Length: 453
Image (cartoon, rainbow, N blue to C red):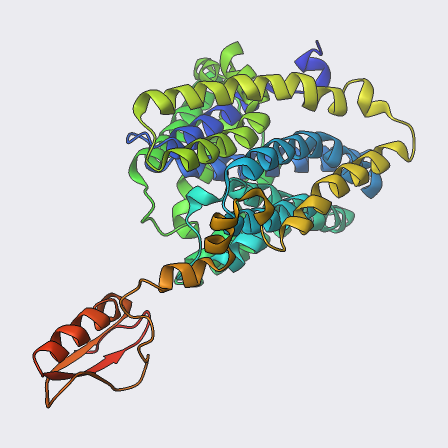
């Protein structure tokens, strides 16, 4: 087994990863004590900003930085576990999903492999978009944000460090953070965009990066104060935030600053043991694979149950996520990252990655056509062939005009009906009843509207 020290692991940073992944896990499993557990993702972004900038700065200062080396390293680190997760999820999705849901899943596979999941799911957000519980790769939006950060950050940092003024690089990073945060606040009336799009997350990565320009904490007391304050800020967000919280915007600052304080302070002081102890550090090391596998487990199981998870089921899936995360870490991540498979010569690494990506994308593109309806019986295919029409046929508003004045029933209109699809569903029943009584009504319907006072 590889020694964490030989891999340049930092115990308290790994422990902070454990806090982040466990908060996300608890949130997705529906535990009521963690309504804001989604902020674990923001803590991950801060950690990434710190770790990636630390690595890049060291290589740039030693004049050994290479874009090829950087991106190859990131690919070895992230792609194997991601591709295995996608493959396992695709097998499960092919067994349980309806054609319509499998079509969207296929699109998410292509997006996850190519690194634009955040854009894919952002484009799907809308009035009639599928619920999150039909999207087992929804969580890969965070990885796409990471990859897009990797695209711009090395060049940005290389340019900033090229200016031989000690103050220039941290000032440039701080300005980038302020612009990103200002945009996140300014566009908070478009919550889907600021949630999914990388430019509105840059400030979280930048907060992590700026730690490297802050003098190292001196003294145990200051380290303990910083660690305690950081954990309190993260804990506050986990306990106080909810799905109704405008996010990220300014609400991302407490968990982001909290994460930065823990990274800075836990290196010194007794409280650092909270995140640097062996159990927390190990959970942090397996956090990437745990994060990858937990959401497909939740979605694929829930998809077959047609209900929310019970408490025992939530605990069981949470435990299974950690066990599978550990297995993937040791058998998938490490061999490709630091083990024998990481030393494939020359062109073999990129070739293996390209072949693996193609093996995932090719069947996904094929499934985009009709969601592999051949899996269904003939009767089921007739229903699934046009799912929208299947649901519209018995709908009470089928066949009635929309956005036009409509006569219902027979005889002189003595009633006016106006409303959206909730009103339209009564059109057939109302028209039939009015006709039987030789009465009439004037109606005006439109989808997704509201009636002005």
